[in-house]
Image (cartoon, rainbow, N blue to C red; front, side, top):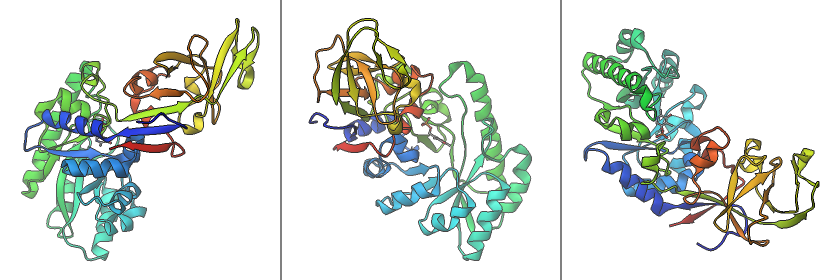
Length: 368
Ligand SMILES: *Cc1c(COP(=O)(O)O)cnc(C)c1O
């Protein structure tokens, strides 16, 4: 890859392929694979990434909102797309683009039924979401009989999957809770399917679920973060490859004398002579203010340099006193060389937040 000449998010499709094959290798041959590509494929690029995953043979896609699914259809995605959190206001677009809603409440069920019936549609594919303890979206045990009766004999819809979402698959201390979630899902989905005499796809595992609770893979798994190269576990992280590298360059170097300050609100004061570098990336690009004030480091010539002072909207300043570098040199914010998980930790957050937060202002470039 040529050296960066501006701030770019480099996306390596070979690493994506590696991660996909790694995750698949943890599954039975017959288990379907749903690729979660919501939020611009976790901050990368949903179209390029989904097209690659479609080519690799993923069985299903999921997005959070209908609009994200429309983007995928326009990019040429023909595989089924589950919309995890549809809103009634987008049902027209959802149906027009053959997107499949997660039905998680009677409210959303009634509104969806009204729409498909008005359009006189037959067997429109839907997914039933059960709440097994995350307490975010989904039907509970108390809803089961009413849900069965609402779905029964209704020809306008067809339940193609039933699923639930686990709250703490990456946390071994929550194994008992997770097992209870899986048991509850087993019960709810079994009663539901038996009552309707249907055999839809069942699925509950996310990435860490695949890695820690493989016996509960059912007919399909849903993976997001693992595809992008993070496994929520150091032992797994070494086997995955981060697909995205956030790179920038040095715009200007400054010599700072003792007692001079750097940046807004004079948040950094030098005690000695320092060399600082100004980089063209800031909180508007997704590097929040919590990464400033020497908490977080970036990589310059394979050496760590702290972000000093306050993160600005369009720039950060770093201390490169001990690094032999010049204007125009490349700087790595995160990537395979400096894990987004590690960087995120310095600001008390998780890789998910850091990578999905890289704004659309940052140019995406691809390694095929
Ligand atoms: C985002 C999401 C996933 C993907 O989880 P990862 O931890 O990124 O693998 C799976 N299922 C649901 C319902 C989600 O919202």
